[in-house]
Image (cartoon, rainbow, N blue to C red; front, side, top):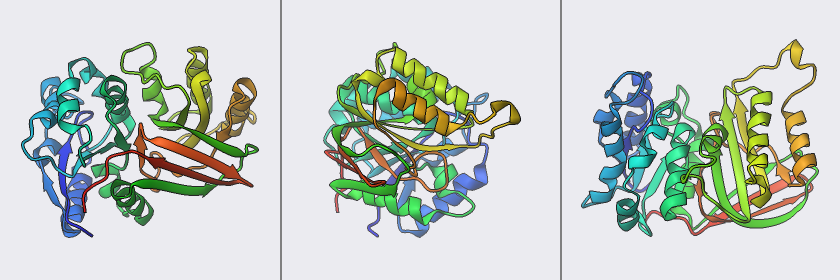
Length: 307
């Protein structure tokens, strides 16, 4: 493994699991990587990882760094990124980061910043594991680690999986998405990417199937789903059905979405808040193919770390 420089940012919630974050740093360093800006881990204001100004500086300072790191890694998600969107230095970040071999990585609440960068200046970032929840997990997922470094160093990102889907075929488009709740929070704002022929990948955590369906209906009724070529569903974790649901679950939600939109819906990708998650470049050119339940997603045109 080549030694990489990793710069930490914490634009969302306070890192309440400090031992996990420190474990994540220890693992990165043990693998030979250099970690900088670790003071953001202990920073705190109310429920946030610092004041709005401090957390905004994590992002905007990237525009003025004399030497860029290989990886910019979010410490955790939570809430707070939405408060920063109007003040991000999009043009400065575009000038410094566009076409550079730098991987800006995170997921969950960080989706808001990633999609805003994509919508405003076309910056491709990676929906990827984060410091505390993934690199600092009690058991480090080798699956997650493998897919992370493979995606950051390969001109073609490729993931394959088995999907219980009636849909077969091939579709091409712009790969985008991330956390569904954060995507929906951007509807009607300048921070929502407006892609024709998109391949939308979605995931979420702590959201009941009826809430997921309601968010998807919002995307449909706002005209966003009509511009997609296909939808890929990732992990939807930490939710439990009750007797009241009476058979209403995620399979119900997915089938209704197929029926009402006519879109192919490819389920079962390990992507999201689960321990095992792939890394995907948001804004890359993608090809999705499904045959006899075997799904393959390929993406190109994203930043690739130098050897």
